[in-house]
Image 1 (tube, rainbow, N blue to C red):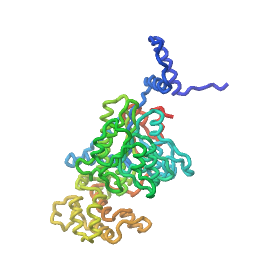
Image 2: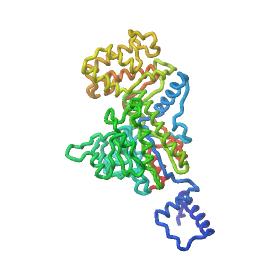
Image 3: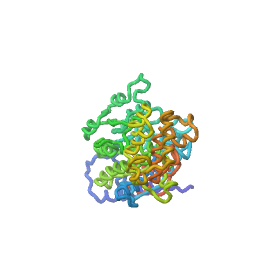
Image 4: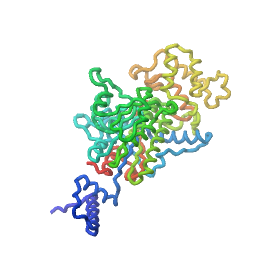
Length: 516
């Protein structure tokens, strides 16, 4: 006869229950005590198991889209050197101080260089799928996967929130509530958002808010499903606990109808940290909550090879994580905070050919705005007015510090003085900007694509130049297959140390929260 075996989990349950029976036998019990419900019994059993490992009641998952180790380290190095007069000093971020760190692989069913839809699916459901697919099985795309957020909502009664600094129907946030054959099914993703029943959404605008024009727009669909649809910062600030299901669309929208880059945000403008704080306020309850927060514009900045914009958005995400840490400090025995990435973007490197063994990251303090804001504020006018190159370079000097050799301030420009080679590269990019502008890869020569990607050539040349002078570079305008880190603090954090696949994030969370 085959010997039956008891799993480690069942062994622990049995031991805990046996101990509990002994304690109950030794303690007086009211004869008329009501029998516990099934849910109560399960919760009591889980409470007994706290001897062996507690179940996190409050779970924060932060995803820095595109945030590889170089993105994190460049932010630490920049912050350290910029605040210490150029000294080689490494600053700490809120999450780099967490006690547990792991390394996560990110490939999907399609490629070692995956996209956000498939990698977020892996994190949310524990399943691999194709690039471009959200929570559906690969190849046939006919079986939906239930997400950790949906399971916590349904099985454990947790309130759920989803925040993103990009569009609220973008691939990463969508992977926690939607199930689509294509990440581009934006209107349908918005409908799924409304049907999720999750208590809190905040971020950028829907990408196809009006659908095909014959259907209620995504705001109306959400309102019909019982959501408070808030589109002003004042309205968001006025929300208080007990407000009910809420969808906040940021009032100040930028490129792609997303939130502003952190470095472009006006004083007092809400950023990721503010939406996390509001989410905590609205979600906090006795049963628990799950809050997924995506810093999506790290990815967008790295696609555009804009190192400074990436750095500032990593720093802002660190601030948002600190808001969760403050909550953890009030609930240290009930809270788990995870910080990770879906993949790396841009192939960012710290170090460049012409700076050899040096970096000059304080050069990046001279960059006052992202490439996207430079496009909308300046370059669109250059194209419309056929502005002379020298006039455009005056704006480049004011906003990036890059200085022509013929400029009156050339002698004091230091490391930001342009060489003749750099001037010619900028001039060539400017001429292409006026004559061609941005274009699709299929319409470009290999040389032009490698130089500018599908972005405005002049803005790319400016970003590349200040990056290189700072000792930074990128290998691609797309994603890479580099592993990413995961940082953990709180209940069950020790499970996230070591090297593992991104699908394991789901399974570790499911085991900790005891969902099926």
